Image (tube, rainbow, N blue to C red; front, side, top):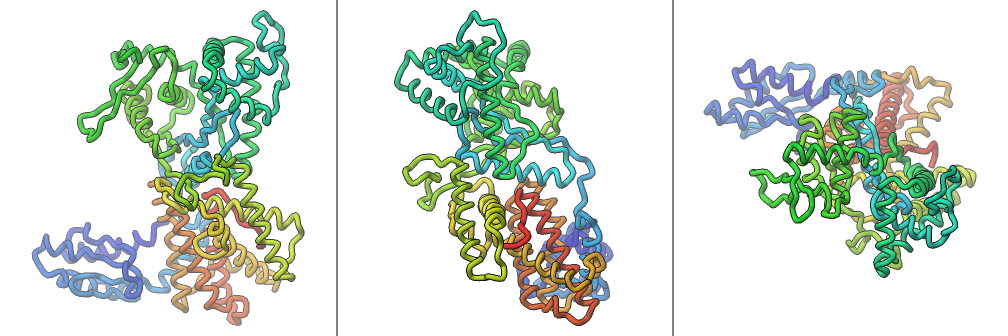
Length: 596
């Protein structure tokens, strides 16, 4: 289904062409003066320079050529040469009715779907998720869902940190605590136990203890380095310990991500890419890309057009050890072999931009990925406290994500229980209150993050995020629940929602038309948000739509309307608004309860 803006531009462009002007001047935009008109065309201003005449001479001709067009209520030429456009209520009603008949509300899937891998999450095994993992998970999940909604084949990969010194540290500390375990007996040839020798709580204590020791005890650090090399060299017992670490960690990570309504298609880690490293390094050497610099193996990735220095990409350290760049490059080799993606999108802190510039250039230069594969880093800013500094606990530590979610759930539950006391007729059971609180809290958390442009830092303000007023997740959900309530009452009178689905009549009020104009933006917003990988644009849209609906609701007697056709038209608008809002919040990764 064509976008409303495109249809309007087509009609205006036709008249520009009929009058002998270049079609490029017929582009229409949303009015920046909504008090004067709904859409505007400034093409006459630019055309005047080319055709050497006053702009209003052109705009007058275009306005005259459009005056009988049924798409418009009015097209006015305003000096010095602007075109102010108001769409006809009848045409708009027809457009909105067509949206209502379509299960995708007029938003068509892409003609040429891509295979896209979204690399997000990035937790380290054996460590709990903390608030620093929030943005990657929340933005990445939305980017995955947005692209999937538009018809792309999208694969979400958590990309676990499960390689390197941290594994050696865990093994060494475990050996000190439980030296009798068979994993540490080099002569053991039997089967290893299927049950892990630690719980997730023990594992989460082992790593920080080992990390602290390695900074204070050089002998311990050397043992950990040795264990790391033996693990990477294939020592059976250590590989068995790694498998236990992975199983215990991943089970816990899945539980925590589930609380965020975040799902991954692949649970691969850095270790999965390691088998690809030797051949990749050999290829880079043989083809003359990689060379030694101060003992390290590097590839030059600078380009003549660079305005700042781009250091070489380090492939192997002087001791032969891998780095993040090695793993990321080998992961691209693996992804090309297994998935043949057209695009790989990485969600990571904006401060890692140099790393990704080096990796992307190295991958293309050395030919380990096809030249036409798109590699994109969505760099996000930090989540800060009200003091403007990275979000911390009261004692200055890094807050566990599980704790943050629990705190928001509790705050929202208290708010709901307080509300129930004030409105006795809306009482819910304790269980209903708890489930509803979790849904609203998740919306508050995700919307609070996603409504900000990803690249920017933002302040985590819990009281603002959980408010039912303003640009917040709870406000969006409250608007949806309000619609659900009206529709339920309508059905309770014995009337059919199906009969009203596409029965949209021309608007009778400014608020009704404003709602219809907002609805008509849906397909353009979705296309634009996916093109820019920008969830915040969807947030801005649903806030606008929710405001437009509430303006319509407060000015319209929907359930008491006596004219059956008019009431069906109102219900059709409610159904469409609810459907679009629910589609958008699903793309953002949360949902609405039945009541609040």
